[in-house]
Every structure is written in structure tokens, then in C-alpha cells.
Image 1 (cartoon, rainbow, N blue to C red):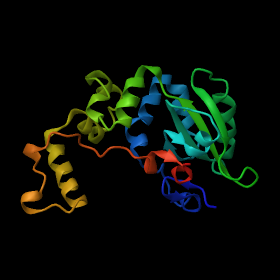
Image 2: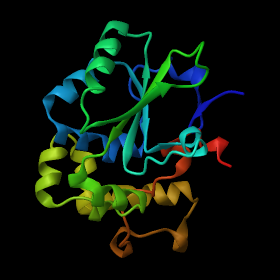
Image 3: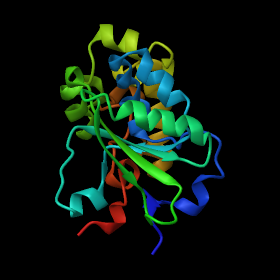
Length: 208
């Protein structure tokens, strides 16, 4: 059995050079800055493969981590930094929840680290899961937490120009044309599709 990250098989992920994009990465991961620069420094030193908000393997074992970020790390890349990170993060009780070998415990080079989501943003986490991006953050948090992500900020504030782009995307995805096309001036919804377990939860294909 091949273990998956959403719909991506593990034997393909090491071909990529950067963290696999998904909605958790875009809209939740930057909130970890709330824990301070030491965490960010340690995270930047390890090779992150993907992030998510759950792992069905953990759910099936009876454990529930409901407001957490799951970070998958390839331990073969920058191995010494990985060891330093694990040693450090396990001592950070206000951040650390769990860690475990991902996939085959004897052969896998992947390691999962489970971090507590900052309590300050619990309501943001809930809004994210509901796909209510415009309810996730106030103006101050948008401008501080996401200061380096102008496109993401446009989703939060329902930027008018971005609405034009997003409605064009919707029309393309759903094959809408003519009178059936979604018109920017009439659209009042969120400027991002809702998150799905397939892209945000590890091993969703193993769900019982």
C-alpha cells in the first residue's frame, strides 16, 4: 500500500523543491509566527514536504488533534538540522503536541511533527475549515501576519480586482459560459474554494 499526502504519492514528493502548496500552507501556516522567531528559524532549517490539518492514520488510532498543524519533514535532507529541530521542539510544551515516523517505521525517511495551533487564532481555524476566509482575521492581523502575501490578503478582504480573477477561474473550472457565467459584479461569495480533506488531511484515502 502506498501512503499518500492528499492525492500525491510519497515516491513523488521529493522531486519538488518547495513545500507542496495547499490551503493550509497559504492561510494557516503563517499564523505560527505567533510563537516567535525561534520557531520560524528552526522550521526554516528543515526540509518541509507538506502541511495539513490532520492525519487519518492518527484519527484511526483513536487520537484527536483538532486544532493542530501537521508538518511532514524529509529527514534525509539537512539531517543535522532535523535532529536539532526535533530536540528543540519537544521541549516547547506550549507548541509541541506529537511527532512520529510517517509510513513504514523501519524504512521511511519522512517524519511528522504535530504542532498546536496558536490559541489566539482558534476562531480563524474554524472559519478556515468552513471556507469562510473573509471571517478569518481582522485588519490588523491581515496586515501583520500576511504582510508578505499580498495575493492572500486579497482573499481575506474580498478585493474587487481579485474578484474578477476568481470568477474567471470559477467559470473555467465549472465550464460556464454565456448566460451561465458567474459575473464579478453579481458574485458575493468567498474568493477561494473551500478546503477539502483530499488536499488538507494526510492519508484521507484511509478514512474508515
